Amino acid sequence: MTAISLLDLAPIPEGGDVAVALRNSADLAQHAERWGYRRFWLAEHHNMPGIASAATAVVIGHVAAATSTIRVGAGGIMLPNHAPLVIAEQFGTLATLFPGRIDLGLGRAPGTDRRTSHALRRNLDGDVDAFPRDVVELQQYFAAPSDQRVRAVPGMGLDVPIWILGSSLFGAQLAAALGLPYAFASHFAPALLMDALAIYRDRFEPSAQCAKPYVMVGLNVFAADAEEEARLLRTSAQQSLLGLRRGMPGKLPPPVADFEDRLSPVEREILNQSQSCSVIGTPDTIRAGVAAFAERTGADEVMVVSHIFDHAARLRSLEITADQTIARASRT
Image (cartoon, rainbow, N blue to C red; front, side, top):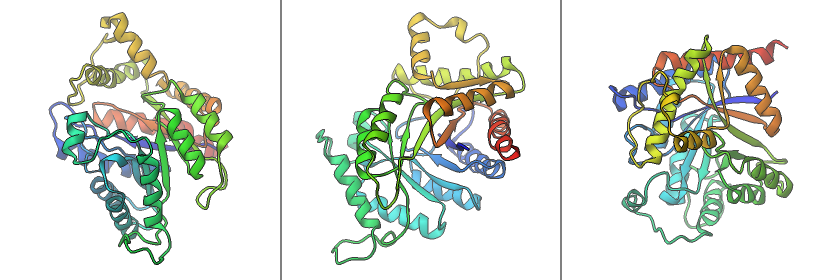
């Protein structure tokens, strides 16, 4: 059975604020736990008016405190923004507070624009070897106690699973070389999905964390009891993506009827390319679409993304998804 997990961007809806977004995230995680989702991950983005999870480790603590069994983690921490020791201490603290429930996904992109990257006070010299070095350094901080002079306290000796995230071939190669699980961001950058998975599986070297390759893939899911409603719900994510591509990120907008009819050919192509890994529709469509995507990719885990304006509609979308995947699998 392919595991089903959930990525939450802690969206700030138009008319709402950060407090609303964070309350919604905790509530969503509680529902996801009851519905049987394996993981609930949050992503690091900065200078984004529509995303409330910039302080990702803090939000993970907020969500983990509101739940009791679901794994909670970062999808991911953008490591170039941080000193590895700081991340080891943050996630060591989380793993101490919530033992056996914390994941640490690592990305190479800054998760923001270049000016904001400078404001985060990291060196942006473009050294392609910096990310692999930082990942290895981070692993060393989580290792069993040794004679190393600098230690992560908390962090040292704790079991904090590290994942490599990516949307290119670079992450696939690194995850394979280090023997780490690999999560591909096919929900917004699907172009190299199959190539990256092939490289990862072909080059994988077993490690203490993973004896064999383990793949997670992102999938946009917009589910409703009626086809027309599901397509309407999707328009909020479409508007948000186009605003980001235009350099005008904003809060998550409400859905717009007939939105796709108003698109230019260029806008339509942008959406078709970036959101090609999507399933939209009624329960039967969701069941078949998720199953087909899992079979095509051979994924061990599918991470669902439902960027929906109305919180109640988002809950219903994810309830339908759980019923058609997680619950159905348990009944067969």
